[in-house]
Image 1 (cartoon, rainbow, N blue to C red):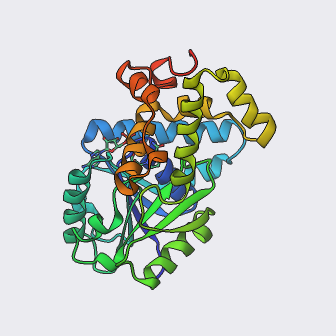
Image 2: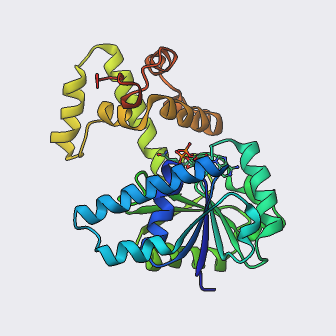
Length: 283
Ligand code: NAI
């Protein structure tokens, strides 16, 4: 199946980036937002990002106009009756996502693939909210989606092989992403590796064995990471790390995934990282 018409549900941090990537790749894209004001905000966010790409000469003015003409912003799911692929990127709340997928199942054409950008909700739970579980999978983009090359593809025990092949080909050939394939387990591949590493860095800092700078510099200069783990925690947001750690711990019940006490205290104290001006560093 060829994917020519896409919808992205939710035009926030991730959805706006995913929609921009689709439009830049020449794909007719509808962004659905919760209401008119949110749709305007999403459009402004994408416009600003594409204008920046033009001013930094990463995109030609003609391509900017072409991409802009492929994007539509809507608030009604009924506009999705001709879509080949829907990528959901709304709030990380299982009940809200299940309600949405039930509606998408009723509105989208029978051939449409329904994908979620969820970081932690089992794909099989989303799939079974629809009458087409074989056509549901995870397409997990990374932040910012316009810059990060990776798209993790997540298949549930119900995902059909041809649906996986179509989605993989779309992500690689149409969007130019690198893909990796994961079974439907908490954390998929990247967060399952990354989060315990970040938790270990926090626990190490908490023992007083080393300073924040030395922990970060150890990984920057010893392992060529672009930034150290505590700087990365501040960038991601400590609340996000705590919630992903809780999901991993709930799934595997292994101490390595348990949020360390310092992380929980910092989240309780509102020291969430860059977004609140204070985390392991001050901003
Ligand atoms: P966000 O809060 O920035 O954006 C969510 C957007 O969805 C908002 O603009 C909101 O108005 C809209 N929305 C909520 N309910 C809606 C509905 N029923 N219909 C239409 N629009 C609706 O959230 P963010 O960070 O973009 O996360 C979205 C998803 O992507 C979540 O599942 C999250 O776990 C996942 N994710 C987030 C990453 C990140 O770094 N922020 C990375 C990878 C995945």
